[in-house]
Amino acid sequence: MNDAEYQKVTVTVKKHLNLDLDFYKPNQMMRRLAGFIGRVGADNVNEFCSLIETDADVREKVMNFMTINVTEFFRDTRHFDMLRSTVLPEILKKNPRPKIWSAGSSRGAEAYSVAMMIEDIAPGTKAQIVGTDLDVNIIAQANAGGPYPDAEAKNISASLRDRFMEKKADGHYVNSEIRSKVKFKEQNLLTDRFEGGFDLIMCRNVVIYFSDEAKHGLNKKFSAALKPDGILFIGGTETILNPRDFGFDRDAAAFYRKSTAPAQITRAA
Ligand SMILES: C[S@@+](CC[C@H](N)C(=O)[O-])C[C@H]1O[C@@H](n2cnc3c(N)ncnc32)[C@H](O)[C@@H]1O
Image (cartoon, rainbow, N blue to C red; front, side, top):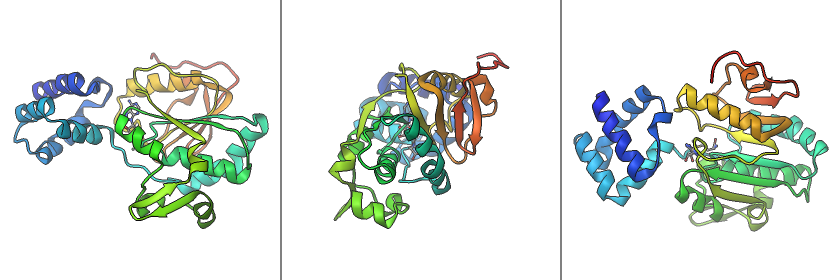
């Protein structure tokens, strides 16, 4: 795919999916798109763009492909162990009604994992847990609390599974108790305003294809949305290179704490 073709895809996707590819790394996106176009039955970029304009199924496939909805419960188990043993107890000690956000929540497995964990370590806690995603179809699936295939539910311990999950013919479901603890809503992390006052923000496996500028802007918004001492929990393969630029201190792998000292800006936004 050449630059002009990529530009055409960018304009079409913006118009018909309301997704702004300017926030994504162009080289990676071009490479991924080149492999994807044939999968919706198009032979070239012009055909691909026509299908986006005319075929709702193709639009849904493109949206899923661009945003990648892969998720699972307790993804990166050792980081969830840390969340359970250290991060959440400290948060709960400071705030018995913690405000928690799963940003880019996909089908909700991450937000529900935290809801189960809190109910397990501090039963009856009235945490305010919200999950947000750009993809409305995925929000509907998150609200339904399932079905999750075996592969996505494999890290749920036997005791949590017994208490909080139900197995049906088509997969695993979160029970109504845990479902009632999480609210999901549509939000675009790149363009929408954020609420504030969070004790914990999880943004994991979402920004992989974002440009450096988009990541930089997002980290600034996350920092502003956290309380002082609040925690940003990122994906197991991700890292924030200059956390002090955003007023963060690295607490442990994948966990960044909003510092109570002012941010040291070392490079331009
Ligand atoms: C790979 S999933 C990660 C799900 C979960 N955080 C996890 O780690 O299991 C990435 C999710 O981010 C969402 N996403 C991508 N770009 C987004 C944006 N600009 N705003 C909000 N959500 C976005 C996608 O729709 C997708 O559901």
